[in-house]
Image 1 (spheres, rainbow, N blue to C red):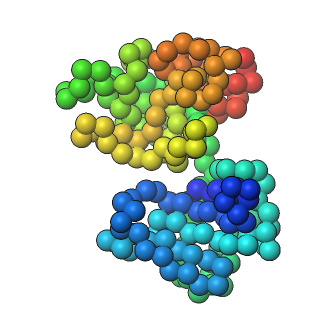
Image 2 (cartoon, helix red, strand yellow):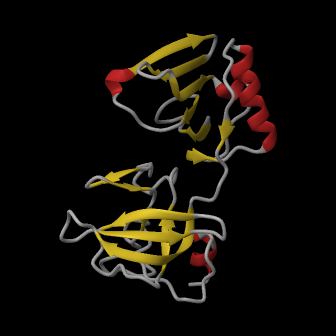
Length: 209
């Protein structure tokens, strides 16, 4: 499994949360051993999350909310889960989630008067199909993409899904959704200057303003 890591000691307690997606809460079951709780989807036995309690007995994650773990911390997490008696292989997702994309194709959604289906390149090797409802979306734009697994400033996590029956993997963002109204505060998606290279991180984009 490939998981996102979260830590909020004040809000939740000394628990490292690993999440792997979303499912109907009625389908969830829990299995606890030692200080580890595994959350499963009982319809398919898929691991949806793992909670490691008293994580500071091993290390204290840096930051609050979505956190990135260094190599030593990732190894510790794997060993904690294994030592608790769970035979689960995990991978902590360290990939940059907010990047510059290029809209290679943009066509109207057949079942909507405002949605468009885009093919948006986010790296040399990856193109994401993203359904977008912004009025100013069009082919040939450089945009800011929240890839699957991105954690928005609101706390919402972007997971793959469907809009009006069409698969969508990611979100093309506005500055308002990113909390960057001081850079630009126009409605619609953030139209980036063309000089930004595909795959450039949001942090690098912000530094240029």
